Length: 279
Image (tube, rainbow, N blue to C red; front, side, top):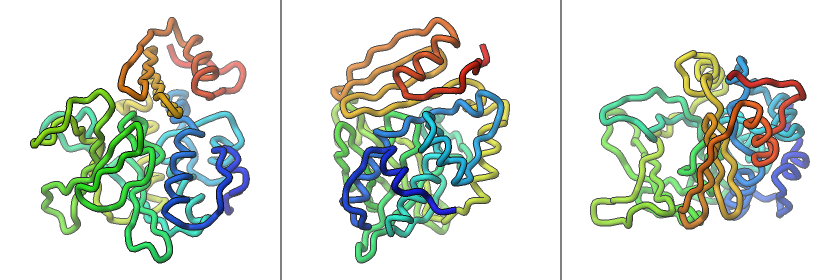
């Protein structure tokens, strides 16, 4: 099946000229982030989400739902291919919250996108469920800072014994400490190489992340929504709103029923009537 590009672009509210250029890539990437929320409700409700394109269309494009990284980035890769970009799918080890020396598996999906005639490949990722995620693509080059306002990102080369260079994505978020000679204020998000991965690879890792009882995505609700001037997150019963200047407001929800109401009203995620979340 090919993606219904008209329906996808309507979902994210994008109406530009459909050409594979760096400007189009940046614009569509940001529109996707603003248009479709992040959420892990399928694993919480006991099933692994389908990564088949018809199912992703039904859920993320035509339904009032979001998804997590494999869903978002599989859909986005199909859209970029339809627009004429060359896409290489990648995986990363998430570094946010990792203990010193901890080695996590490659469980995050991202991609490289290349435009005809453009010598620079672009790191794209519309499915990282964190305020440290990219709003716009980042060129695959060391120490080139991206001001994807209100965020800042860069890639750095990391020590590595493998045959391919290891890249670390870093974010400098609003309200973080001022940068200094040691790089203070920059926070590691994830690490990756440019080894290509294919759809069957993601089927395996998707199943693991969604169904393993030790996976954080199967044990509690996570949702993220990015707007033009704020970032909204839901973790369990806690809602956090982070403004563009880095100021934060938090509140605790009463129970699972209020979670469903907040998901619908604030995140634009609506589940079928009668759905009950685990308590």
